[in-house]
Amino acid sequence: MGSIAKISTLKSTWQRLSQFSKHPRFKLVSYIFKLVLTVVILYLVFRGLELRSVLENMGKLSGGVILLLILGSFLRHSIQLTAWRLALRINPEYVPDLRAEIHSYLIGLPLAFIFPGGFAAMGRIFWVKNSSHVASALSFVVERGLLTWATVTFAAIAAILHFPGISPLWGLPLLLILITLPLWSRYLFHLWKEGEPYRDRYAKSAPRLALLQVIAALIALTQYWLILNSIQQISWLDNFKLMGLTTFSNALPITIGGLGLRESFAIHFLKSAGFVPSQAISATLSLFLIQDVTPALIGLSVLWKKRR
Image 1 (cartoon, rainbow, N blue to C red):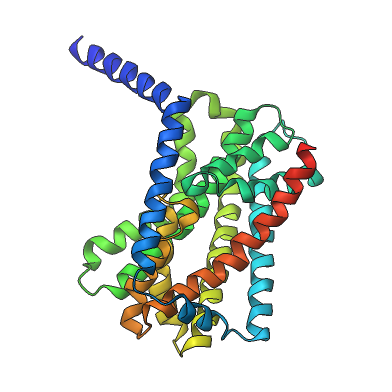
Image 2 (cartoon, rainbow, N blue to C red):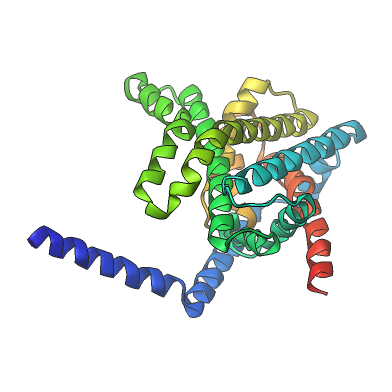
């Protein structure tokens, strides 16, 4: 009886905390806090740096490299769009609509800047027709979850390669569990009674979704390699280790658009390869402008037309 009472107490406590976290005032305070944190981190990162040197390093990118970065960005967004469309099909009642899928994906890009961690991108679920918003939200969680999985997996591999102090006796087994997560995560649906209709389709889609996110992550790392090589020479393997660790910051939803935190990680890790802070910052900002800001502006125009 005592254990049942404790479970009931924990459940009621969790429900109260969940309701509190959804309160508009809590969301506003949380957003303001993280916005301030973003500004503070950016100040600490750029303090003592000459903006001119950052812009000069960004200006070293040749037309050919910029073209390759744009092409890589187009491929990455095409892959993410494909992953979103595939995730929507986890719901057996979903009726595919390519136009709505493209519009909802593009609209989600500017929304990702509204709240730290890109969670506001979930707003895309309101721009695609489905049997329910819950089903669309599940698709978003699956797609975003596997994106985070790819980021963390590459960061884990990079950590094992970069830090000699990590013991393979426990590092490799944990890495194996992490790598195979998309295969055994389907059993989590057994813990969710309402998730039974989606279980089989998720099991079939998860490997393909995981592969798409792996390809997207590899493209991003190659884009960083192209940028860094425009500044000074670095091998692809060293780039993989250092930028793999840097992009782990994308999995930490504490700043707006990852700004500041990503630059801090880049400064710390790229220092071992001989890159000065202004060079590290120019690398992350260059890809941020091409990969995130420009497509978000396109998505903003789509959102504006839809709202009109």
